[in-house]
Length: 638
Image 1 (cartoon, rainbow, N blue to C red):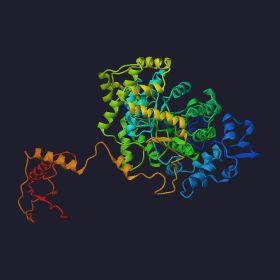
Image 2 (cartoon, one colour; image 1 turned 135 degrees about the horizontal axis):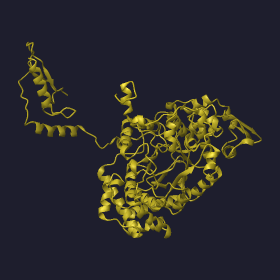
Image 3 (cartoon, rainbow, N blue to C red; image 1 turned 60 degrees about the horizontal axis):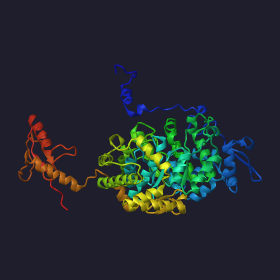
């Protein structure tokens, strides 16, 4: 404590913990640091005359900004607004957690509620009640998960291997991005090829500037997008040279080309941009979600996203992040639930943050689980990354909750990684984009991350991308290259994804593809009405998520004990002295041992040999003048 500024020594200990790297903001509504119920939030109101909205949330139509105008024109179901707005907010909150009130009724009524009304409703729910409501309101019955697959070199070989790894672990979507702006095409190709090694139907996105991302999509390398950002204040839109109408048009362009699309919003975006208007984070997000429903987009990515660390720094911030997801589900939007940004340096806070989402289940638990190392995550570190993937599997196993992932044996992982490297190598060679040596392939195969690889560097990758653009290479060329080099399964899987884009079934709300079949809110809706309804994990799935890398069975324990016993028999041996009888020696201190002691069991749970434990006990008793006979308990019969 010599150099400490603290008076209490325990503060010194706390200052050494990772939590001390986090900062906590004072609640300050005037400056935007307010999770919910800001004194500057408007009161719910809606006035309509002759089918025209005259006032919304206290703002007359003559003063509507572009967000108000868009919501007023395109969001409301005017046939139910009077009924919906008349419901007491607390009563509607009760309905959200009442298993006897069907989801369909709640979704219908939400179309008649203003942003301020929706925010007011959710403020009546506790964290536990939000999680329950989320479980009931989720669009698709079965939860899922999305992975980030990136690396610091934009190396397509590593990208393909890590995409195959992510697909094996169970991710239904893979999102990539770049370190060098021009490298998007090979990243997208590598992720698509790597995932196709494992199964068909893994959806791929390359997150870039919107025009370039659209060009990559039109070339057939990607299958979904979520980069259309929307905001809760007009000034934020203007700062990005956007309007609700331009975002709607872009969304329609993606969908018209057969790409699944969702928007991105999330609290604190307006605060980070400096255009928060003194409103609460939840109210601004309610405007965003209403806007997205009015746009006609099938889903949203919200729950803080890049702003999650800031939201988490204010009181009730974690509650607000889950409330955003509940809002999205209530408005019948697919919800990719954030959890894609590391909000804390405390592992306790990280583990706590994911639990409400895991317990309730969302369409995508993470809209960016870092399936690669933190330093390779080009989006910034996710809430969970490759370093913590087994921790996530353990949470699934321990609480028997569906997080969309499962353990994969090492042999299976290495085989998939090797084939993915060979497949992308074949594509690059056939298209004369690059060539990998066996040494380079091996470095990628075994690597945890790009620090350990000796394959392509960013400059080489940039030249590949320039050639892809110059020669107008599309997914058809990639499919042909795979087929020509004997990767017919992968070529077929990529081609089947192109067929999905033509049919358009996976544009349905909350769609994923499992075993070549679209699973969505249309053909697999979530009808939760209490225990035994909604998503119920099958016995087979329970067995899958119960498997872990360091499982130990009775047989494993006894085999290990046997090996220890054979080794330790050189040091000691127990000889039977017959049946034990009561003694009358006052110096006698009996040591009781179990039936298996020294026979089937030879070490403690801490790994200490039992003969050493027994020897220490004997020596200690004798040193104090005691007489220490050992008594073995009889094994129970039956």
